[in-house]
Length: 240
Image 1 (cartoon, helix red, strand yellow):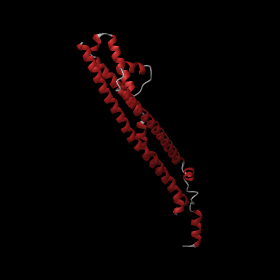
Image 2 (cartoon, helix red, strand yellow):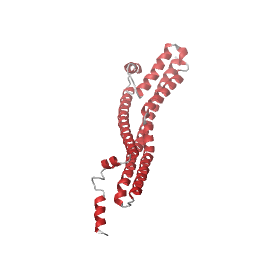
Image 3 (spheres, one colour):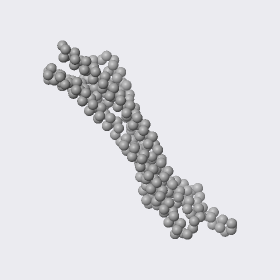
Image 4 (cartoon, helix red, strand yellow):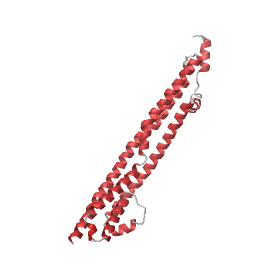
């Protein structure tokens, strides 16, 4: 190889400094920059949702454990209702208060209101469970969307970047690797950011969906148990 050509390639080859991630972003095409910024914003949003849900599920799980311990300790249901009725409740306490409120309203109307009381209590608890699940599962769809869309958005940035790189090759009429490498690196950087946003979002969505389903199952189990207790008391009052 001619020494002059070797010198020219050495001078035009990208150094480690010029190939840094920040430099790749700065030198990228405007469309690729928009794609990168959007993917980085989506990744930050994803992690904010994950942290919020982890805190929420941990708090809800501890609250359920504490409430079940108090509920099955033998404390009077009336005393427990008076303690919780003036608070803003979530999870099992909200389920208990909703059922007890319907129980007390029905007894205010006399024996005639007891006939369909069990059905009304079941409906009230079903509505409460639905609201709690909606609260627990809110924003999980955002994680699913980020996880499924980010790779394709990153791929769009990659295609655009490679297309721009080839346009630069055609304009300069130089096909050396030193000319092609920076443009291709910028394009592949967009794909990498897309995967960085997508992979945690998919993993978090699956894990948090499983956790929310487990919490919902605990709510439904408690609703069935509490409904059985109230049904037994209804039968006893009707027989009296």
